[in-house]
Image (tube, rainbow, N blue to C red; front, top):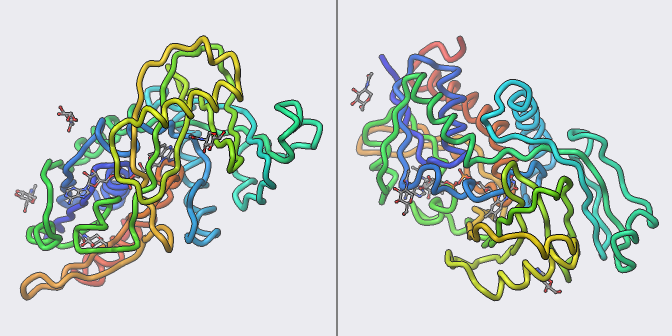
Length: 338
Ligand SMILES: Cc1cc2nc3c(=O)[nH]c(=O)nc-3n(C[C@H](O)[C@H](O)[C@H](O)COP(=O)(O)OP(=O)(O)OC[C@H]3O[C@@H](n4cnc5c(N)ncnc54)[C@H](O)[C@@H]3O)c2cc1C
Ligand SMILES: *[C@@H]1O[C@H](CO)[C@@H](O)[C@H](O)[C@H]1NC(C)=O
Ligand SMILES: *[C@@H]1O[C@H](CO)[C@@H](O)[C@H](O)[C@H]1NC(C)=O
Ligand SMILES: *[C@@H]1O[C@H](CO)[C@@H](O)[C@H](O)[C@H]1NC(C)=O
Ligand SMILES: *[C@@H]1O[C@H](CO)[C@@H](O)[C@H](O)[C@H]1NC(C)=O
């Protein structure tokens, strides 16, 4: 029997899960079904900055495991696959408020807290902060490559909007649910909600470090990507607007240029809005079951990654593949590990 796997979702979570499953079970018949594929998924406008962020509700030990596995993948891409859009970046996060301890601080490079004198260099109002070295991995660059890898391993893609999960399960032996914010509606998970993020991309090749003001009062971040620098940004909970809001553009510009005055000379290339798929109790990564007519179809959920979907995607994808292999073994009795 050839196991038919349907992955719902074409963002980093869906494509990553599909690839991890195909690597473990090369003989399965896998299809990714999604309404949007790259360059139109939530990750495609993200800076791809590796830092667990807005992950409220997810257990810290899970965050550490998933972000570490993704870190290792990004480092290997940096070494062997330059086309994946990975670059290293050092910099500082400063704040007028106390910055909490980071459970994941041993994973990236040279993480250390800033002394008072290091903070006030950015302005007398800053009282705490940290510095570290991390990577940015741009989904706009790596998603097309991963989709090619999925195809090369025999996977296929289908672009359509699903109105029910039964539709996805109709021709599947197992369904992987990576529908992001779509999970709210597909059969309601009311815990899923958007956190609107508006950003601006500017040309400013002289910016080599990242800088983030994490203060509640003056939140702003400046993240260099390979060709542009990302200026952000908003974190607006329960806001569904996908249009660029000129008031937000103005505050992003004002806050970022206040933080780094040299940006006043930068040319604006693009503005963009994405809705982070947040979930009150954090990432949902677990097995479930679906009744479709007389069949029980196993499901693996993988959604609700909020502001860290890129940072966590490979660790989550590998765990999805583990769970999927066990479910396939349990339901269909095939060898689950090769
Ligand atoms: C401004 C901004 C900046 C960000 N910066 C970073 C960053 O620097 N680092 C980081 O780690 N994260 C960042 N994030 C978060 C990250 O982008 C997301 O967590 C991640 O992209 C979520 O990926 P996903 O695959 O789970 O969901 P999505 O990319 O939203 O994918 C969901 C998929 O499901 C499909 N789908 C949903 N419903 C249906 C349906 N009914 N029928 C068919 N298909 C359906 C969609 O079409 C889509 O293909 C940022 C987000 C924003 C908005
Ligand atoms: C995979 O499954 C689809 C849907 O059931 C089917 O149309 C297709 O022929 C299958 N492909 C292979 C290689 O088995
Ligand atoms: C992305 O969206 C644009 C604009 O809606 C559309 O023209 C394009 O075909 C989409 N691309 C993909 C791969 O879905
Ligand atoms: C995905 O999960 C959401 C939230 O639980 C649910 O509403 C939806 O039906 C699921 N979709 C599939 C295809 O299992
Ligand atoms: C910018 O700063 C203002 C106050 O100076 C603050 O209210 C706002 O949250 C900050 N960030 C954005 C994106 O507006």
